[in-house]
Image 1 (cartoon, helix red, strand yellow):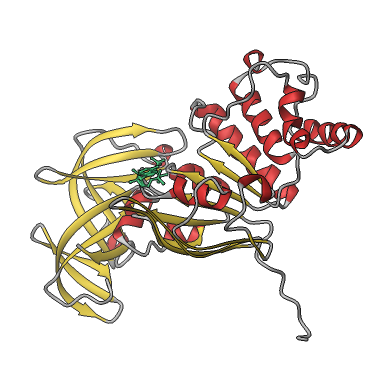
Image 2 (cartoon, rainbow, N blue to C red):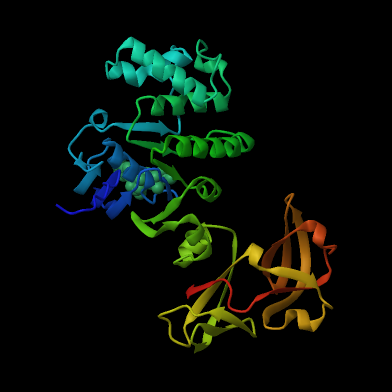
Length: 366
Ligand SMILES: Nc1ncnc2c1ncn2[C@@H]1O[C@H](COP(=O)(O)OP(=O)(O)OP(=O)(O)O)[C@@H](O)[C@H]1O
Protein backbone atom coordinates (compact mmCIF):
# COMPACT_ATOMS: atom_id res chain seq x y z
CA UNK A 1 0.00 0.00 0.00
CA UNK A 2 1.26 3.46 -0.73
CA UNK A 3 1.57 5.74 2.28
CA UNK A 4 -0.27 8.63 0.73
CA UNK A 5 -3.82 8.37 -0.48
CA UNK A 6 -4.74 10.68 -3.32
CA UNK A 7 -8.48 11.38 -3.38
CA UNK A 8 -10.16 10.49 -6.64
CA UNK A 9 -11.15 13.37 -8.84
CA UNK A 10 -14.90 13.89 -8.54
CA UNK A 11 -15.32 13.64 -12.27
CA UNK A 12 -13.00 12.05 -14.75
CA UNK A 13 -13.45 11.84 -18.49
CA UNK A 14 -11.21 9.55 -20.49
CA UNK A 15 -10.99 10.13 -24.24
CA UNK A 16 -14.68 10.81 -24.59
CA UNK A 17 -15.97 11.24 -28.16
CA UNK A 18 -19.34 11.63 -29.81
CA UNK A 19 -20.27 11.91 -33.48
CA UNK A 20 -23.57 12.82 -35.07
CA UNK A 21 -23.33 11.61 -38.66
CA UNK A 22 -20.50 13.57 -40.24
CA UNK A 23 -20.14 15.95 -37.27
CA UNK A 24 -17.71 15.23 -34.46
CA UNK A 25 -19.45 17.03 -31.59
CA UNK A 26 -16.98 15.87 -28.92
CA UNK A 27 -13.51 14.83 -29.97
CA UNK A 28 -11.47 12.77 -27.51
CA UNK A 29 -11.87 14.84 -24.35
CA UNK A 30 -9.81 14.06 -21.21
CA UNK A 31 -10.70 15.91 -18.05
CA UNK A 32 -10.42 15.66 -14.27
CA UNK A 33 -12.48 17.86 -11.98
CA UNK A 34 -11.53 18.18 -8.36
CA UNK A 35 -13.77 18.47 -5.34
CA UNK A 36 -14.86 22.04 -4.73
CA UNK A 37 -14.06 23.28 -8.20
CA UNK A 38 -16.16 25.66 -10.29
CA UNK A 39 -15.42 24.57 -13.83
CA UNK A 40 -16.76 26.22 -16.98
CA UNK A 41 -17.06 25.01 -20.54
CA UNK A 42 -16.90 28.17 -22.63
CA UNK A 43 -17.26 28.23 -26.38
CA UNK A 44 -19.29 29.42 -29.35
CA UNK A 45 -22.49 27.81 -30.51
CA UNK A 46 -21.89 24.32 -31.88
CA UNK A 47 -18.51 23.81 -30.17
CA UNK A 48 -19.77 20.74 -28.28
CA UNK A 49 -20.40 22.09 -24.77
CA UNK A 50 -23.93 20.79 -24.39
CA UNK A 51 -23.11 17.41 -25.89
CA UNK A 52 -20.24 16.99 -23.43
CA UNK A 53 -22.50 17.96 -20.53
CA UNK A 54 -25.18 15.52 -21.70
CA UNK A 55 -22.59 12.74 -21.83
CA UNK A 56 -21.58 13.51 -18.24
CA UNK A 57 -25.26 13.52 -17.23
CA UNK A 58 -25.95 10.19 -18.93
CA UNK A 59 -28.44 11.73 -21.37
CA UNK A 60 -26.21 10.92 -24.34
CA UNK A 61 -24.04 7.79 -24.64
CA UNK A 62 -20.48 8.52 -25.80
CA UNK A 63 -19.17 6.60 -28.84
CA UNK A 64 -15.84 6.07 -27.12
CA UNK A 65 -14.30 6.73 -23.72
CA UNK A 66 -15.32 6.49 -20.08
CA UNK A 67 -17.04 8.71 -17.53
CA UNK A 68 -16.02 8.22 -13.89
CA UNK A 69 -17.66 9.87 -10.92
CA UNK A 70 -15.84 9.61 -7.58
CA UNK A 71 -13.77 6.81 -9.04
CA UNK A 72 -16.80 4.78 -10.20
CA UNK A 73 -17.26 4.02 -13.90
CA UNK A 74 -20.76 5.34 -14.70
CA UNK A 75 -20.47 5.23 -18.51
CA UNK A 76 -23.23 2.64 -18.81
CA UNK A 77 -25.45 4.03 -16.04
CA UNK A 78 -28.65 5.99 -16.73
CA UNK A 79 -28.89 9.60 -15.43
CA UNK A 80 -30.68 8.69 -12.19
CA UNK A 81 -27.93 6.22 -11.26
CA UNK A 82 -25.20 8.88 -11.34
CA UNK A 83 -25.96 11.10 -8.36
CA UNK A 84 -25.76 14.26 -10.43
CA UNK A 85 -27.85 17.42 -10.12
CA UNK A 86 -28.86 19.34 -13.24
CA UNK A 87 -30.03 22.86 -13.97
CA UNK A 88 -30.77 23.66 -17.57
CA UNK A 89 -31.53 26.82 -19.51
CA UNK A 90 -35.29 26.47 -19.66
CA UNK A 91 -35.30 25.24 -16.12
CA UNK A 92 -38.75 23.71 -16.44
CA UNK A 93 -40.25 23.95 -13.01
CA UNK A 94 -43.46 21.96 -12.77
CA UNK A 95 -46.12 24.66 -13.20
CA UNK A 96 -48.75 22.86 -11.14
CA UNK A 97 -46.47 22.11 -8.23
CA UNK A 98 -45.60 24.58 -5.47
CA UNK A 99 -42.07 25.75 -4.81
CA UNK A 100 -41.69 23.19 -2.03
CA UNK A 101 -43.05 20.35 -4.19
CA UNK A 102 -40.77 21.34 -7.06
CA UNK A 103 -37.72 21.39 -4.83
CA UNK A 104 -38.29 18.05 -3.10
CA UNK A 105 -39.13 16.26 -6.33
CA UNK A 106 -35.70 14.56 -6.68
CA UNK A 107 -35.98 13.26 -3.09
CA UNK A 108 -39.41 11.82 -3.84
CA UNK A 109 -37.95 10.02 -6.84
CA UNK A 110 -35.30 8.57 -4.55
CA UNK A 111 -38.02 7.56 -2.04
CA UNK A 112 -36.38 9.53 0.74
CA UNK A 113 -38.67 9.47 3.79
CA UNK A 114 -40.74 12.43 4.71
CA UNK A 115 -38.91 13.69 7.79
CA UNK A 116 -35.61 13.64 5.94
CA UNK A 117 -37.25 15.42 2.98
CA UNK A 118 -38.59 18.15 5.25
CA UNK A 119 -35.24 18.58 6.90
CA UNK A 120 -33.44 18.93 3.56
CA UNK A 121 -36.12 21.30 2.30
CA UNK A 122 -35.71 23.61 5.30
CA UNK A 123 -31.96 23.63 4.78
CA UNK A 124 -32.04 24.47 1.07
CA UNK A 125 -34.86 27.04 1.43
CA UNK A 126 -32.69 28.90 3.90
CA UNK A 127 -29.53 28.59 1.80
CA UNK A 128 -31.28 29.90 -1.31
CA UNK A 129 -33.19 32.68 0.48
CA UNK A 130 -36.56 31.26 -0.54
CA UNK A 131 -38.18 31.60 2.89
CA UNK A 132 -41.88 32.41 2.68
CA UNK A 133 -42.22 31.29 -0.94
CA UNK A 134 -42.71 27.57 -0.25
CA UNK A 135 -46.43 27.57 -1.10
CA UNK A 136 -46.26 29.67 -4.28
CA UNK A 137 -46.51 28.39 -7.83
CA UNK A 138 -43.78 29.10 -10.41
CA UNK A 139 -45.87 31.72 -12.24
CA UNK A 140 -46.06 33.67 -8.98
CA UNK A 141 -42.28 34.03 -8.81
CA UNK A 142 -39.81 36.47 -10.36
CA UNK A 143 -37.22 35.17 -12.84
CA UNK A 144 -34.50 35.20 -10.18
CA UNK A 145 -36.69 33.35 -7.69
CA UNK A 146 -37.56 30.71 -10.29
CA UNK A 147 -33.87 30.34 -10.97
CA UNK A 148 -33.12 29.82 -7.29
CA UNK A 149 -35.88 27.20 -7.07
CA UNK A 150 -34.31 25.37 -10.03
CA UNK A 151 -30.93 25.49 -8.31
CA UNK A 152 -32.44 24.30 -5.04
CA UNK A 153 -34.01 21.36 -6.87
CA UNK A 154 -30.65 20.54 -8.46
CA UNK A 155 -28.88 20.60 -5.10
CA UNK A 156 -31.34 19.13 -2.63
CA UNK A 157 -30.32 15.51 -3.15
CA UNK A 158 -26.70 16.35 -2.27
CA UNK A 159 -25.37 15.39 -5.69
CA UNK A 160 -21.75 14.51 -6.25
CA UNK A 161 -21.70 17.08 -9.06
CA UNK A 162 -23.98 19.84 -10.35
CA UNK A 163 -24.29 20.43 -14.10
CA UNK A 164 -25.57 23.80 -15.30
CA UNK A 165 -26.31 24.55 -18.96
CA UNK A 166 -26.72 28.29 -19.62
CA UNK A 167 -29.01 28.61 -16.60
CA UNK A 168 -29.00 32.42 -16.77
CA UNK A 169 -29.64 32.76 -20.49
CA UNK A 170 -33.25 33.89 -20.07
CA UNK A 171 -32.64 36.47 -17.37
CA UNK A 172 -32.15 40.17 -17.87
CA UNK A 173 -28.71 41.63 -17.48
CA UNK A 174 -28.97 42.95 -13.95
CA UNK A 175 -30.50 39.80 -12.52
CA UNK A 176 -27.95 37.80 -14.39
CA UNK A 177 -24.97 39.48 -12.76
CA UNK A 178 -26.64 39.15 -9.37
CA UNK A 179 -27.20 35.43 -9.93
CA UNK A 180 -23.62 34.94 -11.15
CA UNK A 181 -22.35 36.06 -7.77
CA UNK A 182 -24.96 34.02 -5.89
CA UNK A 183 -24.34 30.81 -7.79
CA UNK A 184 -20.65 31.10 -7.12
CA UNK A 185 -21.34 31.70 -3.42
CA UNK A 186 -23.52 28.58 -3.17
CA UNK A 187 -20.85 26.58 -4.89
CA UNK A 188 -18.16 27.77 -2.50
CA UNK A 189 -20.40 27.14 0.53
CA UNK A 190 -21.36 23.65 -0.56
CA UNK A 191 -17.99 22.65 -2.04
CA UNK A 192 -19.77 20.52 -4.63
CA UNK A 193 -18.08 20.78 -8.03
CA UNK A 194 -20.16 22.72 -10.56
CA UNK A 195 -19.75 22.25 -14.30
CA UNK A 196 -21.13 25.27 -16.01
CA UNK A 197 -21.79 25.67 -19.73
CA UNK A 198 -21.92 29.10 -21.30
CA UNK A 199 -20.95 31.05 -24.40
CA UNK A 200 -20.78 34.21 -22.29
CA UNK A 201 -17.21 35.06 -21.37
CA UNK A 202 -18.15 37.53 -18.64
CA UNK A 203 -20.20 34.87 -16.90
CA UNK A 204 -17.32 32.42 -17.22
CA UNK A 205 -14.79 34.88 -15.84
CA UNK A 206 -16.98 35.95 -12.92
CA UNK A 207 -17.85 32.50 -11.68
CA UNK A 208 -15.20 29.97 -12.59
CA UNK A 209 -12.07 28.70 -10.97
CA UNK A 210 -11.02 26.96 -14.17
CA UNK A 211 -12.21 27.35 -17.75
CA UNK A 212 -11.98 25.14 -20.81
CA UNK A 213 -12.44 27.04 -24.06
CA UNK A 214 -14.09 24.66 -26.53
CA UNK A 215 -13.86 24.68 -30.29
CA UNK A 216 -14.92 21.94 -32.70
CA UNK A 217 -15.40 19.39 -29.94
CA UNK A 218 -11.99 19.93 -28.37
CA UNK A 219 -10.42 21.98 -25.61
CA UNK A 220 -8.59 24.79 -27.34
CA UNK A 221 -7.20 25.80 -23.93
CA UNK A 222 -7.87 24.72 -20.36
CA UNK A 223 -6.60 26.51 -17.27
CA UNK A 224 -7.20 28.90 -14.40
CA UNK A 225 -9.37 31.77 -15.57
CA UNK A 226 -6.65 34.37 -15.04
CA UNK A 227 -4.28 32.27 -17.12
CA UNK A 228 -6.84 31.99 -19.93
CA UNK A 229 -7.44 35.72 -19.78
CA UNK A 230 -3.85 36.90 -19.64
CA UNK A 231 -2.12 34.14 -21.62
CA UNK A 232 -4.42 32.99 -24.40
CA UNK A 233 -2.91 30.01 -26.19
CA UNK A 234 -4.35 30.83 -29.61
CA UNK A 235 -5.87 33.64 -31.62
CA UNK A 236 -9.25 31.94 -31.14
CA UNK A 237 -9.00 32.10 -27.33
CA UNK A 238 -7.69 35.66 -27.49
CA UNK A 239 -10.67 36.73 -29.55
CA UNK A 240 -13.15 34.85 -27.40
CA UNK A 241 -12.02 35.91 -23.91
CA UNK A 242 -11.81 39.59 -23.09
CA UNK A 243 -12.04 42.43 -25.59
CA UNK A 244 -9.04 42.68 -27.84
CA UNK A 245 -7.85 44.62 -30.85
CA UNK A 246 -6.32 42.58 -33.63
CA UNK A 247 -3.56 43.92 -35.82
CA UNK A 248 -2.34 41.71 -38.62
CA UNK A 249 1.03 42.24 -40.26
CA UNK A 250 4.28 40.69 -41.40
CA UNK A 251 6.86 39.46 -38.92
CA UNK A 252 10.11 41.05 -40.13
CA UNK A 253 12.49 40.23 -37.33
CA UNK A 254 12.66 37.84 -34.40
CA UNK A 255 14.99 38.45 -31.52
CA UNK A 256 14.49 36.05 -28.65
CA UNK A 257 11.27 36.95 -26.91
CA UNK A 258 10.55 39.96 -29.08
CA UNK A 259 9.68 40.36 -32.73
CA UNK A 260 9.06 43.24 -35.07
CA UNK A 261 5.88 43.34 -37.07
CA UNK A 262 5.37 45.52 -40.09
CA UNK A 263 1.91 46.99 -39.99
CA UNK A 264 0.50 49.72 -42.23
CA UNK A 265 4.00 51.04 -43.01
CA UNK A 266 5.02 51.10 -39.33
CA UNK A 267 7.02 48.81 -37.13
CA UNK A 268 5.40 47.42 -33.99
CA UNK A 269 7.23 45.42 -31.34
CA UNK A 270 5.37 42.20 -30.59
CA UNK A 271 5.92 39.25 -28.23
CA UNK A 272 7.48 36.35 -30.11
CA UNK A 273 4.73 34.27 -31.69
CA UNK A 274 6.76 31.04 -31.24
CA UNK A 275 7.19 28.51 -34.04
CA UNK A 276 6.89 31.18 -36.70
CA UNK A 277 9.63 32.15 -39.09
CA UNK A 278 10.53 35.69 -39.97
CA UNK A 279 8.50 36.79 -43.00
CA UNK A 280 5.29 35.06 -41.88
CA UNK A 281 1.94 36.80 -41.45
CA UNK A 282 1.11 37.22 -37.77
CA UNK A 283 -1.66 38.69 -35.69
CA UNK A 284 -1.13 40.79 -32.58
CA UNK A 285 -3.99 40.58 -30.13
CA UNK A 286 -3.99 43.32 -27.56
CA UNK A 287 -6.68 43.90 -24.93
CA UNK A 288 -8.51 47.21 -24.79
CA UNK A 289 -7.30 47.81 -21.24
CA UNK A 290 -3.64 47.28 -22.19
CA UNK A 291 -3.73 50.34 -24.45
CA UNK A 292 -3.33 53.85 -23.14
CA UNK A 293 -4.38 57.02 -24.86
CA UNK A 294 -2.94 60.52 -24.62
CA UNK A 295 -3.32 63.85 -26.42
CA UNK A 296 -1.09 64.03 -29.52
CA UNK A 297 1.41 66.50 -28.09
CA UNK A 298 2.33 64.30 -25.13
CA UNK A 299 5.89 64.52 -23.83
CA UNK A 300 8.02 62.01 -25.77
CA UNK A 301 9.81 60.60 -22.70
CA UNK A 302 6.47 59.28 -21.45
CA UNK A 303 6.28 57.12 -24.55
CA UNK A 304 9.84 55.83 -24.53
CA UNK A 305 10.10 52.08 -25.03
CA UNK A 306 6.44 51.85 -25.94
CA UNK A 307 4.66 51.11 -29.17
CA UNK A 308 2.75 54.15 -30.30
CA UNK A 309 0.21 54.84 -32.99
CA UNK A 310 -0.98 58.34 -33.77
CA UNK A 311 -4.62 58.70 -34.70
CA UNK A 312 -7.81 60.65 -34.41
CA UNK A 313 -10.32 60.06 -31.64
CA UNK A 314 -13.59 59.13 -33.30
CA UNK A 315 -15.84 58.48 -30.34
CA UNK A 316 -15.96 57.83 -26.62
CA UNK A 317 -18.32 55.13 -25.41
CA UNK A 318 -19.03 55.78 -21.76
CA UNK A 319 -19.39 52.54 -19.80
CA UNK A 320 -19.47 53.81 -16.22
CA UNK A 321 -16.21 53.00 -14.49
CA UNK A 322 -14.41 52.89 -17.81
CA UNK A 323 -14.89 54.31 -21.27
CA UNK A 324 -13.93 52.91 -24.64
CA UNK A 325 -11.94 55.38 -26.73
CA UNK A 326 -12.31 54.53 -30.40
CA UNK A 327 -9.37 55.79 -32.40
CA UNK A 328 -8.89 55.81 -36.15
CA UNK A 329 -5.23 54.85 -36.62
CA UNK A 330 -5.18 54.30 -40.38
CA UNK A 331 -7.57 54.60 -43.28
CA UNK A 332 -10.54 52.42 -42.25
CA UNK A 333 -8.76 50.98 -39.20
CA UNK A 334 -10.00 51.65 -35.70
CA UNK A 335 -8.63 50.46 -32.40
CA UNK A 336 -10.16 50.68 -28.97
CA UNK A 337 -8.47 51.71 -25.73
CA UNK A 338 -10.33 51.37 -22.47
CA UNK A 339 -9.55 53.89 -19.73
CA UNK A 340 -11.01 55.64 -16.71
CA UNK A 341 -13.11 58.42 -18.18
CA UNK A 342 -12.40 60.91 -15.39
CA UNK A 343 -8.66 60.70 -16.01
CA UNK A 344 -9.02 62.09 -19.49
CA UNK A 345 -10.56 65.16 -20.97
CA UNK A 346 -10.25 64.16 -24.59
CA UNK A 347 -12.84 65.19 -27.15
CA UNK A 348 -13.91 63.45 -30.33
CA UNK A 349 -11.99 64.60 -33.43
CA UNK A 350 -8.93 65.35 -31.31
CA UNK A 351 -5.51 64.14 -32.46
CA UNK A 352 -4.30 61.48 -30.03
CA UNK A 353 -1.66 58.82 -29.60
CA UNK A 354 -2.39 55.29 -28.52
CA UNK A 355 0.51 53.59 -26.78
CA UNK A 356 1.34 50.38 -24.97
CA UNK A 357 4.36 48.61 -23.52
CA UNK A 358 6.40 47.11 -26.34
CA UNK A 359 5.78 43.40 -26.67
CA UNK A 360 2.67 43.26 -24.48
CA UNK A 361 -0.37 41.42 -25.82
CA UNK A 362 -0.15 38.06 -27.55
CA UNK A 363 1.00 37.23 -31.07
CA UNK A 364 -0.06 34.27 -33.21
CA UNK A 365 0.41 33.01 -36.75
CA UNK A 366 -2.25 34.78 -38.82
N1 LIG B 1 -28.81 15.18 -31.55
C1 LIG B 1 -28.00 15.69 -32.47
N2 LIG B 1 -28.07 15.28 -33.77
C2 LIG B 1 -27.24 15.77 -34.71
N3 LIG B 1 -26.31 16.71 -34.48
C3 LIG B 1 -26.19 17.17 -33.21
C4 LIG B 1 -27.03 16.70 -32.16
N4 LIG B 1 -26.67 17.34 -31.01
C5 LIG B 1 -25.68 18.17 -31.34
N5 LIG B 1 -25.37 18.08 -32.66
C6 LIG B 1 -24.30 18.81 -33.35
O1 LIG B 1 -23.11 18.65 -32.62
C7 LIG B 1 -22.37 19.88 -32.56
C8 LIG B 1 -22.17 20.31 -31.13
O2 LIG B 1 -23.42 20.71 -30.59
P1 LIG B 1 -23.62 21.19 -29.10
O3 LIG B 1 -25.06 21.45 -28.87
O4 LIG B 1 -22.93 20.25 -28.17
O5 LIG B 1 -22.81 22.56 -29.11
P2 LIG B 1 -22.86 23.75 -28.05
O6 LIG B 1 -21.46 24.22 -27.94
O7 LIG B 1 -23.53 23.32 -26.82
O8 LIG B 1 -23.74 24.81 -28.82
P3 LIG B 1 -24.86 25.81 -28.22
O9 LIG B 1 -24.12 26.83 -27.41
O10 LIG B 1 -25.47 26.37 -29.46
O11 LIG B 1 -25.79 24.97 -27.43
C9 LIG B 1 -23.16 20.87 -33.41
O12 LIG B 1 -22.62 20.89 -34.70
C10 LIG B 1 -24.57 20.30 -33.40
O13 LIG B 1 -25.27 20.71 -34.55
